[in-house]
Length: 159
Image (tube, rainbow, N blue to C red; front, side, top):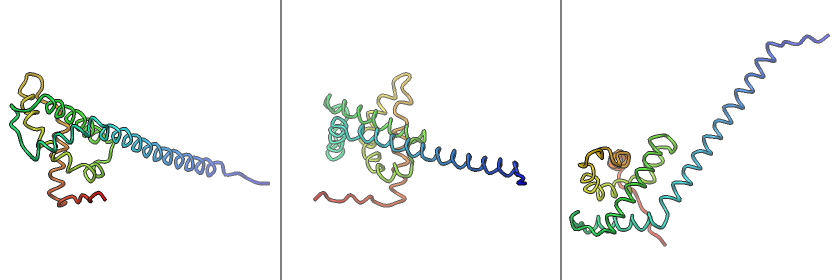
């Protein structure tokens, strides 16, 4: 007659269930990351964001005092601050991997923050606005440090 070792069978079943659970959690995490990247990519590469980014890049090359900014420039700065703050918030909440975000976006955060900072500083002087766009600032500062530690980022020419 066969004797079953129910303790061993139970332990084996528990181990298999644990492996299945861990595997499922791993796949769910990967799916969440993929969805987060896809959403942010669409947001960051949308036509309005690209045009605003272009306007700020032009402003970084030929600086204009903030008092002389055109209304379109102010709208562009606000849009960039909102979008990049959202991106940085997603990183701070661990919906996006920080290291990968730094590798791919550090130079943009650094450059765009330097252009946006005077406007943000002006807004933060208003009552209740002292923490406005702080995730953008925080990630831009991390980006600056990352760029300093890792050297210049190579941007390949478009063929």
